[in-house]
Image (cartoon, rainbow, N blue to C red; front, side):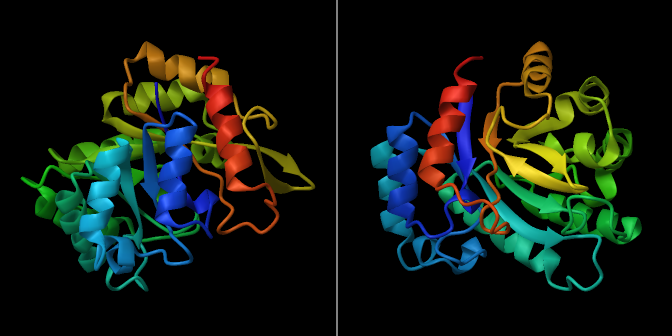
Length: 263
C-alpha cells in the first residue's frame, strides 16, 4: 500500500519540511497542491528557479511526487485559462517524472452547476496535449461527476489517456452513492485515490482525522484491494481551506500512516 499526503494539510511548511516528514513517517509520496501559500505549482520557486535542487532532494530521499493537483475547473465559464494552466502543469509533471495531474469539472466538492459540453471540450484538449508525455490528466469525482456512472460514461467518451481520481469522500457524502456501486461503475478507470473522513454535524460536513468520522473507510480499502488497485492512497487534510482544522499536519499525517497500516 503506497501512502501519500496532500500538501493542503501543511500550508505553512517548506518543501524540505514536507519531504522530511514524508520520509520520517514512511510515506512513499506527496501530492503537491500548495506550498507556503502558493497554490500554482508552475509559479512555485521550488519548481521554477530551484527545480534542479528539488529534483536532487527527491532523488536523495526517494520520496515521489505522486500528483500535481491543479485548480483547473473545466466546466466553469469564468475559469477562462483552465486549459492553458493544465497544459503548463503537464509540462512541469513531465519534467519532474510525475505521472498524474488533477483537473476538476467545478471547484466545488458538491454539485453547483457547470457546463458539461464545455468540460468535455476542454478535457479532450488537455488529454490530447498530454499524449506522449507520460502524464495522465485525471478527472476528480466532484462537481458534475458525483454520479460515478455519469463519470464513467464521460471518461469512455474521451478515450485513451483519460482517467479518474476517485475522491472517496465526495460521491458518498454528497450523493449518497454506495461504495460498491462507485467501484463497480468506475473500475479500472480509477488511477488515483483521495481519502478523508468526516461527519455531518448541525447540517454541515465536519472533517475528522481518519477513523473518527463515519465514512466507510474499511469498505473503501477492501473494495479497492478486491479490484486490484495498486496506486497511491492519498490523505487530504483540507487545512488550507478550512480554518476549523486546528491539528498540525505532523500530527494528522502520523495518525493517518498508523491508521492505514492496519490494512
